[in-house]
Image 1 (tube, rainbow, N blue to C red):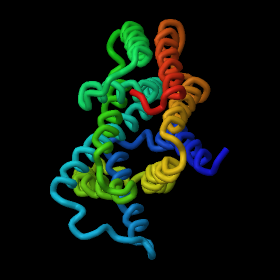
Image 2 (tube, helix red, strand yellow):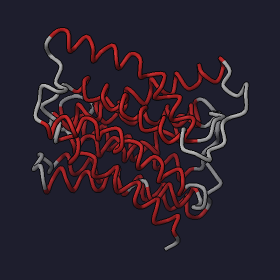
Image 3 (cartoon, rainbow, N blue to C red):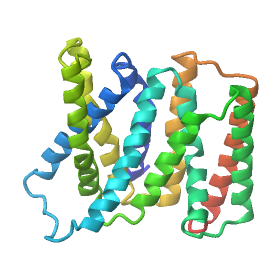
Image 4 (cartoon, rainbow, N blue to C red):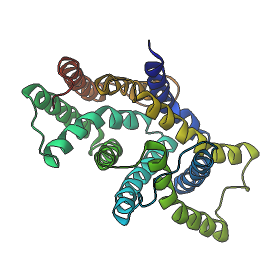
Length: 288
């Protein structure tokens, strides 16, 4: 394996292990966890940008149009992070896994609807299989898998917005988090004034985990940014299934979430869809 491939595997493996970390702060309200994640991520990214030897962006690069684009991306990733943290804290790790399994197919649908991309018959078959799987799970749950669909829709749309983002990965991520930092700080101040703030009122371990959430957030993103420079996108597309697979193993083996019967049938349909999709990507990575 090449160094770039190892970096990609590391990035997706860390994302897959995220439930273990966010379970450590499950007793903190998800809104506060999200706010701390944003604030400490921004601080860490600020230090990276201030690192000696980095070349600053040319003057005039960050225009109002660019800021608006990254504000949209920031809102989408903020929604995604909140849903994920809330779901892990409320024992819906199986559903988070489903969300990231179906994200590639949501990307396909967004490409058709927004970018007017044309798909091959095999891709439509994959989408139909995944839709069938979601329908089975809707029947099993008694309602649509809202968390999974919310995660897939928010992250898929985030990817669509980032497709036209002009800034380098580190600077772009820093701008996104900076745009969210002021509201996050305001929320934390309000929580503190109301007496519901957890930071510095919980155990020392919880305080450290809230701070460490920033590093945990940016580490896989930087690994991913390094990997994608040298690894073909088709290969990165296959590596992304590492993350939900690890999440599913954790949900079943460590957290003992319910899974079987009809739910298994729904997941099997989604997995078959991904096999069809992945096989086509391997044969024709440049096609839709």
